[in-house]
Length: 330
Ligand code: SF4
Image (cartoon, rainbow, N blue to C red; front, side):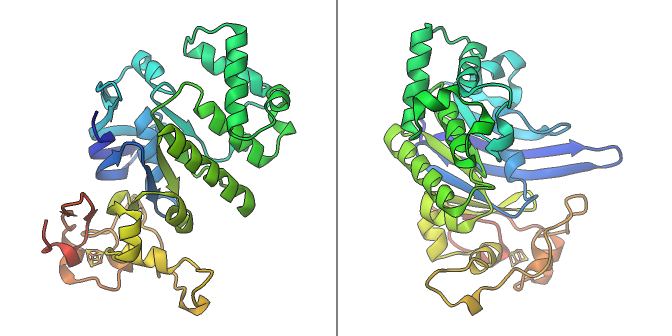
């Protein structure tokens, strides 16, 4: 079995507009380790959601995978080239192999369907042939697994549930067809911190007990520190740094990663040391030349403004895209 469940190979994702083409993801290469939690971190507009949507080919219109390959490696050693899949293949692939927990569960559930109908509809849409009793047992088991009062919740409409309960229903729904990878797009947005912590503990438990790979999109670096195994830091549509969470936090290399971590308050550290990154995220229609971070980088050199740095890859698979490390051992 391949160690990586997913490979992005030089992926570029474009949004062709009337006068311009907006490149939201620019030449991203990344391998996602099987059975681990990988976090994609970055400010809003950095390309996290666009990149993750490419895994199930549901990039918002008019987005397209303009270049590169997105390859899924199944447990059965089958290889799926997602960018080449037709609608029928995608229909079989989605939810069976990869499921997604969307931002804001409040709007992800259909308000006129009960929780039971959501589960049944998903099973029917994917042609899962089960008796009514088997369906019922499966739904109850999953709702119970996410620590909900299964019998009661199954009968409820979304408006009868709290935000945290709805999100747990979404997580149970994402497990329905036993996927190998779950994409979590800011799964705790709009939830209070106690519920956030509860949901992340639950997801960690699912990852550890069921061995499901998770890809988490977030802008919250503190969540990454406590929840993820690997981190990929995105900026301006590019991955700037990737590595094991523990290594990146201990020995952060890229100036943007340092800025992100330094901008996060610590419960034990000195609040006066918290420092925001100066400047604003780049305009994706007019990206800076050279390194996309150069106009916010304190270490910017002349060459940084002229040509984008190459990726420097280390023996353990971690990498950084910055001239400051371009001469280190590859
Ligand atoms: Fe800063 Fe240059 Fe590194 Fe970009 S390449 S992050 S501008 S030092």
